[in-house]
Length: 279
Ligand SMILES: O=P(O)(O)OC[C@H]1O[C@H](O[C@H]2O[C@H](CO)[C@@H](O)[C@H](O)[C@H]2O)[C@H](O)[C@@H](O)[C@@H]1O
Image (cartoon, rainbow, N blue to C red; front, side, top):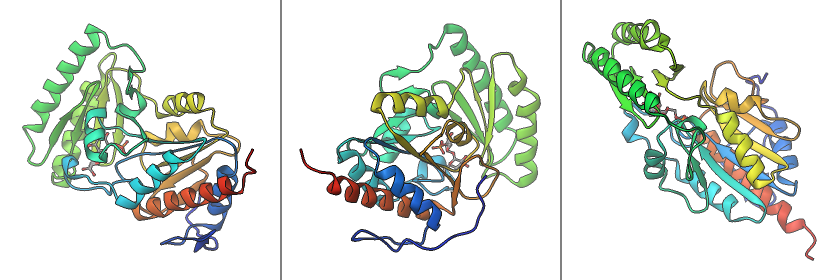
């Protein structure tokens, strides 16, 4: 389990300046991962690449994070990805579809090629019931909203009073969340009900297989990211962003630290590749 201490600093990686200090042990782990033949760097979107905001549609990525992912994606033997709880269409729009960066939506189940699992007519009917139920609950509380996605629906309470938010969440927990076939996950001021298993760990596994990565670097800030952290192994580097229990090996503070981390990995990877003998 990670702690909150920072150790040392990484003001330079090769010739590349770094905006913020990172824990020294994290920089060492990133350097090792960056030196391996094939590297996969993946990050969550909301709360990592994009700061948390009041309304989901207003989320915007930090440009330095997108630049770093695009730089990584352009490097030889290097794969970059964003794995998000967003619907893939929203993720494409909000992220700006960075060049060369793989986008995976719906908490790791929605790839460019379609869903990891087949969606049946029963799933579609169940999702429709869920959306109806969440809309009924949301209508009873000011500031509670519903986000409808291809295989799930989310009830957001960030803009409700604490009492209303808790009451709305509790109605979902004790109601639709208990229905047969419903997968319930709670995140940041949100409860989400899905009709298929969603698993960012499976998405990491798929991308690792496709890219042949010798090491994976993954950054995440929320509950669904823990499934990704739990599949990391060996020289992989799991980085929890912000507070909360985690199985990640390292911790940083906020999305600005994510930008620094991604910029650092890109610099370290560039340095490593430049040092490889030319054939
Ligand atoms: O896996 P992620 O990329 O982190 O997506 C998780 C959820 O993010 C969004 O909700 C969260 O961010 C919103 C914008 O900052 C915030 O208003 C909300 O309170 C957060 O829960 C998104 O709306 C969800 O669909 C994602 O599942």
